[in-house]
Length: 342
Image (tube, one colour):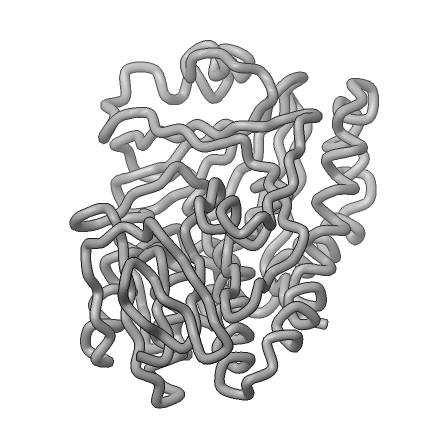
């Protein structure tokens, strides 16, 4: 086998698809059975929609016109300039990726990676030899930790909570509602379903967080929910490097700042392509360089926004300022729409 991938989330399956297209013998191991769900905002930026289409993946969902920031009476909109994004249920995205990967000849097995050993010729994973291993095993990547690449981060830890509501979307925008201690991301994901996700440093129940957004809470009052509240975090994860020998970290496993700017899937898809190019070329150091290039804008903008909005006066002034400077807000949204562009 040329490449074994740990994790069948979007990063892992996209890596598998790129590998299959490059003529590599590839398999994916995923410890969970069936369709994999995860707490996330479920909005695909236009760049992610384009990257998925290039892989032959067209998940069902709801087209997104742009991003809207809301804080009390203040609101400001910015349309995507290069075509729509798409709100997609995480399960629908996983199903679409998995079907295309299987059709491309990728083997997907329900197995857990427990032991990784390396030598000059390859990697041995639980007794199975492969040329390279791609760890796409998520935010809390056990492989990242096992390889000694994990860098702890304890300050300002943010978590996410998500619930679906059974109602028709009232907007074609991703709405980001701002309050003192949290943001809520409202994403239409189908003609009769809306995803409502909370990001915050405060550890409270989901409904308690919604109470900080009275207008949104009133709109959702009495509306049926579709599924349980799902959580994820801490979101901030860091790695000292993206490679160790013949192992590459891809997607959230490679390091993550925050979901504030909604670029996770687009970045994971770009990393998947870069990882396979490095494996094919035999130069894994190229992947480290590409990872820094791909994530540069995301890291800079996300850290800047997080740092600024930790201060209550700045946080309170953010949406009014965007309302007064719509050209700046539009330019920022355009940058987010294609985060992997140089």
